Length: 195
Image (cartoon, rainbow, N blue to C red):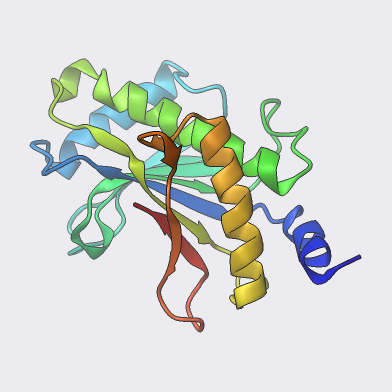
């Protein structure tokens, strides 16, 4: 087995991934407005997974914003680095929709599906009155597991799988594939960005 194949196999078991869909332009909604929205999502079971609680960190400058904590993932209206967006942070895969995932490509496609579904819900949310929109071409994918090396080999394997998932999800740059590039430094968690 070649090195990419060996690394790809290791990444097939990687679950802790974050996907952030950046907001399109400046949001006219305040982070605190997401609190009642996320509470309603819990009570009305808007998403097909176990949702547990809402946490408000909107007071933290360029912080995590407002979090919707679920058993398998955390959704957040994230404000980090001064770039608002929807953050989908997967931690487990125990729900019926996620339990059958067995490959990195399948996992990344599932991440895109879950994040885009939440974006659709937020954009259609009556309480937010169309004041929040997301750019599904401006994405950040981060490995949130310090046991996974942040080396070039891992970055190449992950970016290839991410490109395939984006193509399968119909995310394109005109007629061509979306550019995926690594951001940050090697000592930081591996992060890829589109655009």
